Structure formats: structure tokens, C-alpha cells
Image (spheres, rainbow, N blue to C red):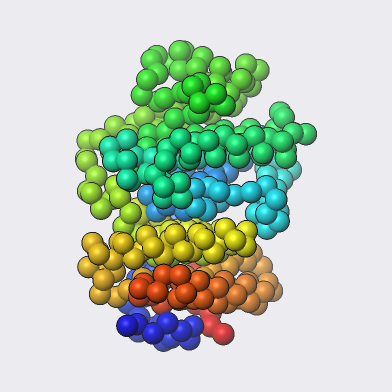
Length: 357
Ligand SMILES: [Zn+2]
């Protein structure tokens, strides 16, 4: 049995070394890709936000629409089960929205559920693989967000979508469940634009129609690529080795598909339940993943900071998450072998720095 404690020598632990190397790779890529991000942003004057599930197969949603890494703010939690009364979540979401509004941009928020068309049991674990429950939640949450931001009808657009994780195909879901816009089912360019106008009710917002049209066509090309090289079974089902609690993961952890399960650190009861669900998924994964079986799982407790003088505060938060992950996994998923690693991520560079109590 692996002994879990906070101050383990991370220099010697292969799980931690692995994750630090992955982070390092993204930190360097982030520098190299700066010009590309600037150009993409100049051509797409929108502020983009994605709210989705914790699932490791679902994390690279922006890239399936052709959005470069770092050009879309991401919030992840089991089944995208966020609530508009969670203080930390709504503060961060509103901060993100205001960044766009102050820059004079329209804000587009994708709220997403996921399913597998090929295997019922590869759906969303937070809804026991029930696709209808997952989309019902997305539509309810979309209405909650629309109520919350009802005073900004022309500037904030909330768009519920569903993703088939077999091939990353997206479907825009209408409030009646029936009004959908499938990338695959669409015909020529003008009929696609008409569908998008109808779906979004955006007759007078051609900028938004053009953006969504671009996303739909990019997604269609991406899906075609995936279909030409069928995914390995381990990429279609859960195969994560990392449980990530906190903030600072979204830009790098799942650049390698299916690496980690990401939980947002808000909502007392829901976070504990999320840690338990994620812990059980890792326990099941360890039966099929030799690396996980040999080394156990890695739980990362992480907080993000943007100014050096706030690093100590971020460290305190990260250690608080670490204590909680340790306690919940030990009591509720006692058969899982795991270690907890604490770190902080700088929001401009994405660099992960280990911290200890
Ligand atoms: Zn899910």
C-alpha cells in the first residue's frame, strides 16, 4: 500500500516527474505559440468560455472547434454540474465575462454535455451514462445563466451543446431538445448559416453567425480526421491517471487526451461527491492501465495565481484542497492507491510549481 502524505520527495516520484514534464512541455509551447494566439484573437474578436464535464475525454473541446489553447476560458466539474449560487464559480465566471465586455467583445459561453453514440456505458458518469439527464441539466443550467446575465442580452450568448466523445462531433441543442444543428447533417454553406441563425435566434448578429459557422465547419473537418484514424479503445473510455482538484489545469493537463479528471473547487457537498466519483473512476482505470496499477494514481491539488505577491495565498488554498482530497479519497475510496501532490500554477505562463506544508 502506498503511503499518502503531503511532503513526499516529489523529485523521486515517477508520477510527479511525469506531470511536471508534461507541464514543462506546455509551458514552452505556450511561449512558442504566442504569435499564433495573438493573430487568432485579432481575427476572432470574441471572448470565449467553455463550461463542461470533468471527464478527460472532454477537456480539449476548444481544440475540436479550432480554438487555439489559451484562447478560451475553461470551467470543468462532474457533468458540468455548476450552480449559479456557488460564490467562487460565479465570481470567476463573471470576472472572465467582464474581461471580454471591457474589451468591447461579445461573449460566447458554450455549456456542454457529452455522450458516446457507440457505447452507452462510455457516457457521462456524473449522470450514470444517462444522455437525456445530462442534456436536461445543460438546458436547465443554460436557462439559469441566461437569467443571471439577462441584462446583457446583446453581449453575452450562452450556447448549449452536446459532444459525442467517440469522434468529438458537436451538436447545438435547442431548448426544446429538438432544435439541433448537427455539423454532419448540414448541407451547403448558406443552409448551414440559416440553421445557425434559426438555432441561435441571431438574425441580426451576423458576426456571431459567422463565428459559429466557422466552428461548425472546423468541427466537421476535425471529426473527419478522427474517423480516418479510429481511436484506440483506451481513448474512447475512461483511462485517466490523474485527479486534479482546483484551478490552473485546463490549458495543459489534457493536451494529451484522457490524462486527468478535473474538478472545480467550489460547492461543498458537490466537490466531495465529485472527488468520490473521480476516485472510483481511477480505481476502475487501474484494472486496465499497467502504469496506474504499478504506481497508483496521482491526485493534484492546485491553485492559480496571476501576481507573484499572491503566490502565498494560492499556496494556502492548494494545501487546503490537498487536505480535502486526502480525507475524502481515504474515507470514501479506501481501495484506491494514490498520492497527493500540491502545486500552484501561474496564469500567464501556466508553470506548475510544487508546494508543501
Ligand atoms: Zn461527464
